[in-house]
Length: 342
Image 1 (cartoon, rainbow, N blue to C red):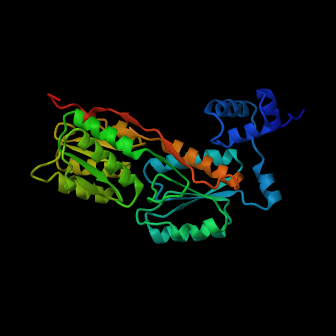
Image 2 (cartoon, rainbow, N blue to C red):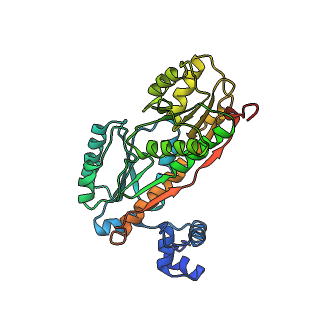
Image 3 (tube, one colour):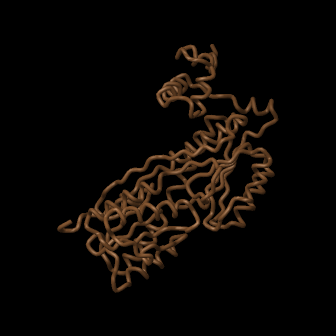
């Protein structure tokens, strides 16, 4: 005998709530409490509920594909982001079309045109390091296609985005280094025009000021890829007044810095300490293990996709930009071991 398909109405009756509440909880609507979202999502999973969005989209002549533009798929962070996005899209009955900009503004513009031609229902974007403004996304918005930005975002108001509190996280990381006895701390940032660098530089400065330490401009370095990170690290560790700690803002910059430190014959943390924003396994497989500001790429992807589907399914309500800020965690390991006397 064929099992009867679970419906929103059935879930609502079991929980004693309205059909609308269940629908909004499954869409991660901000008006629904986290407790109710968990109850609805757990019951939906137990009952094997799957929304038939494909049939709905066919009736409405709508696309069942969302687009994703990312700088690159290398390293651990973006594959983790894509896993979070794909899971949400699958549960909503949508396909995912993934494009890479390879950190090129021109390639990013080509991605936008191609996705627009494929009639996507919505777009998720982490911009290239060459991107300084968003005008090339106007055609997408003008076509009524919702966009949500995440992680690498240009500083601009009135956009929907999912990110971490980079200021708070960088302040916490820099404070940890100071309290561990390090006094000459270099920050290895990325594109100076992006919030990912701007916020983390702010947090770094705030921690120095709070501890009565002068901010040295030469101690803020910029690198957009592994090779650049290795090059600038080689330069800074060759200084007469060599830094005693390096704080990198990404897995790429971490990898480049580690290569330069190894080639220079320096040891971590005796000669130089290192701390990094990271979501990858590199921090735990290295010897010594690397202290990190942990931020979940999977969670960022999951939340960004959920916000995008909220916009897709609530076009009249989702007009006021929503910014979701996710938590980070400072994980202390061997690479920032306290200096004697600290």
